[in-house]
Image (cartoon, rainbow, N blue to C red; front, top):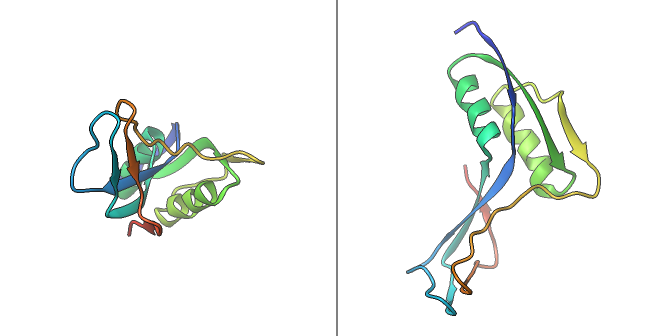
Length: 115
């Protein structure tokens, strides 16, 4: 594929918590494993087309927190041009963790990066 693609989109840090079961309303469940993975619809699209062989430039914003800075490394490793990604000082990258009707899922103490 000899295409130049520009993606404008979101960048997230996904938190995947494995447990024996989903918490019921009002219940707290201990997590067994906590995995961090790159995410965001825009980031996922940029990675997908880069892996298909396109030259990809990505336009987005990330925070200057460890999650945002790690996302820059992940995108760069996939050959994506990140020159148009703005690093916003004193901001955090979105880390969506769903809530289940007043229930809590506790993550294990040490998350690991998904490889």
